[in-house]
Amino acid sequence: MENNKTVNLAEKAKAIAITLIGAGIFSQGTFYFKAQNSYNIPRILYPVFELLGHVGLAVAMLFLGLALVYWAYTKWKNGNGKPNIFGMIAVAAFGLFFAILLITGNKKTTTEELMKASEEARAKGIEKIQATDKPDFGIPEVDAHFAAFEKLLQEYKAAYKNENEHEMAAKQNAFIEWNKKSAELMQKLQTPEQKQQFSQYLGKLSMQWQAAK
Image 1 (cartoon, rainbow, N blue to C red):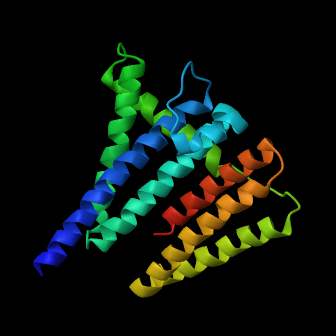
Image 2 (cartoon, rainbow, N blue to C red):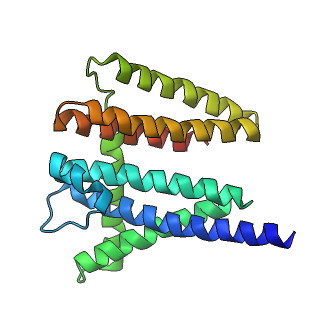
Image 3 (tube, one colour):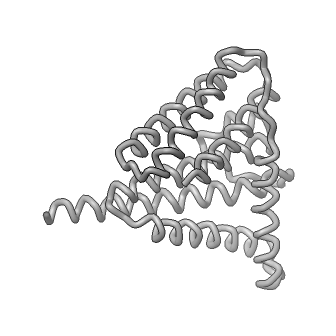
């Protein structure tokens, strides 16, 4: 029993740490849709910046940030954590990083203006992703990959509606594998523009997955 408590606490601690990292990356990414004098680029995303520029980097950071928060959520659940508590932690993490970024970017701005600018930046970044149309590259493997997501999403919604914990966990694992396949398919695209469209649409699908709960 004591070992189980220790493991659960460790999983929750990891989840909080990963959430902070994900929130930081996502928050920073929302500012990169506009060109900056300098960029804080996660090492893993440097090739994206080289190929796709600041907009591609912004999209990739949003996707990576959301993926990390989702991963943190799975760890939180593994530690028998309550979803509503995790939600509060995630909201606080996003709010904290948006505030830090805005304060350091413009120290003369009032608190009210900071909150408004934070919300506008977040909303514009999310709106841009949600408005993304499904790209048509004429590649059957990519089309099948998108169709597989739609099927998986409907199955996950059904499992969540029926409160089938076992099936939900299975679909979450399948979604993780689907994301791995996404990374492989992106490498097969020919142009930076195609890769940018693909990554931005992945961000939209990731949001749809999060909204299915």
